[in-house]
Image (cartoon, rainbow, N blue to C red; front, side):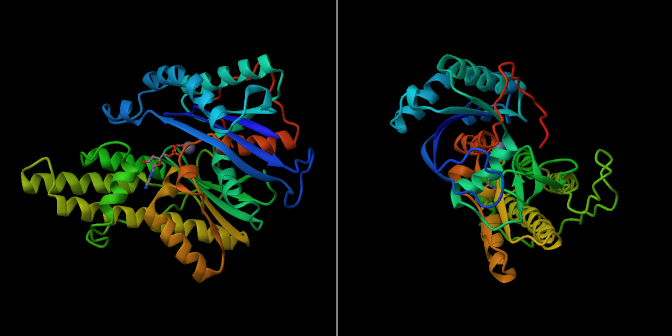
Length: 361
Ligand code: KG4
Ligand code: ZN
C-alpha cells in the first residue's frame, strides 16, 4: 500500500510517499501488524517569505502553495521512485489551519484522486502530528499520553487504541510555539522564534529571571465537561516577559536589550515553558496509568524539551517517544501515516470534501 500524503495547512507545502506492508483492512484493535516506511518526504518552507513580515501572512501563504504544490508532489514521487500509477491512495490535511492554504492541498488532492480513480482520505493535522510518533517508532506501549505542541496547538491526548484519540487538556490561550514566536518578536529576534530562542537559551542562565506562576483553578468555559486539570496557559508568561522587557527598556533608556540579558531571558523563558509541558504531561500519564508518553509537533524539536523529557523518562520509568526533527515540524509523511489509519477503517473522503479551518480532534 503506497500512500501519497499532502500537507498545506500553514506555511509549508509538503508531499510524501509512505508505504505500508501487511496492510489489514478493518483491523481496529490491538497493536497493528502494519509497518510504515517513508519512501520520500519533501517540504518546501515559506519561512523566507513570511520572515519579512514577522509572521505568517495567510494570503501570501496560499499563493505560494499554489506555486509550489505541483513541483513538491512531483519531487515526492521522483524521490520515492514512483509514478502516479504506483500510488494506491491519497491523504490530505483537511484542517485545522489557514483556510486558503488548506484549500490548495484539498483541491489538488481531490483532483488527483478523481483523475487517478484512487481513494482519498481526509486527515486532521493534529492526528498527523500524533501519528508521527508511530511512524518513527512503530507500535508504542498503550495506553499512551501524547503531547502535541506546535505553533497553533498545545494539547494532551490519551491513546488507548491505535488511531483513537481522547482530548485530556489543551491550552486556554496561546500555544507554546506561539508564545516562543511572540517573545522572539518582542525581543526583535526574528521569525520563527522557537529555534532562535532555543539556540540563545543554551548560552544563558536559566534562573536569572523568576516568572510568576500560572495556576488554572477554574474549568474551561468552552469545555465545562473537562475538569481542566491538564490544561495549559501561556499568555500570563508572555505578558510577564513583555512587562520585564518594557521595564528594562525604560531603565536602560534603549529599545534593544544587551545580549547577556537576552540570553538569560531566553533561558529563563525556555525553562518555564519546558517545565510546564513536562510536569503536565507526566502527571496526565500517571493519572491515566499510561505505559508510554509521546511528544510531537514543532516545539518537540526543542533541545531542552527533548533532553528533559528523555531524562525524566529514565527516572520515572515511563518511556518517552519523540520523532526525529524532520517529523516533528510540519511534514506530509505524518499525514500519509494518519491517512493509513483512516484507510484501515474504510473512512474514504466524499467528493465534496472541503477544508475546515477549525476542525476539532
Ligand atoms: O508543528 P509546526 O511546524 O507547525 C504548526 O502546526 O504550528 O510548529 C511550528 C512551531 C513554531 O511556533 C516554532 O517556533 C516552533 O514550532 N518551534 C520550536 C522549535 N522549533 C520549532 N519551538 C521551540 N524550540 C524549537 N527548537
Ligand atoms: Zn503542525
